Length: 296
Image (cartoon, rainbow, N blue to C red; front, side, top):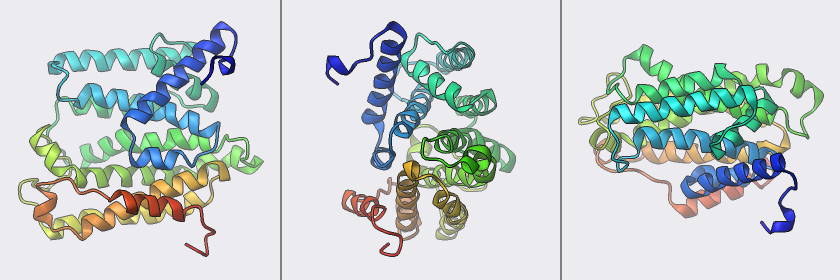
């Protein structure tokens, strides 16, 4: 952005720098999310980017293999990030630009500790848990994915083009769909990243699933759960304001495509390699969201 477009004044300039830092994180790491987020209208797009940026930084602290950090050091950095984030929710300021950008979004849209704390709790789980039972699995999915969907929903229903009913009651009405969409994204990732989680991180997320001996039946059972979540979320996506509907629909449909591709891939391949949706298919999925509903 040229210098003449940078806001004047200390607080405004610092906020602009923070938003730019968050956007840089998204541009560096995003793939499917990046494609879908481009369909969000401003100011929604910028706010969602700040959420993703904070999530990405926390994930890097926990998972980046080449940081040269011990588990204890990773835990200390994660604790410090959570403490600074919660402090910024109270004060509206952080020395970390990504945290500052997130806090501005959170304070404007009512994203509070009830959503932030479970996220960091799930990230912290990754530092010491290698397997999950049904209860810890549900808790992990809630904190790592469902709350992120709920954070984004707070932004969506407060958009300038949201009607009065959606502003007043949309969060409560659409929260189940947002949670299930976030859960679907995470569960797909568990299957797609099965080999990397096993070999690089020493983790197995899905209860009862042996990452060394995945079967087609286990693959299908997990994807049946994913597809049920995606189907349940679809009606909620349709009820979003226009400023976010196409972007969220694109993300939804991209993960539908990934689910379908995983279902068509033999289990022994999933257990050894990361399955991807080809770039031309991604482009087609995103393009279809721009068509009228009947044409899709």
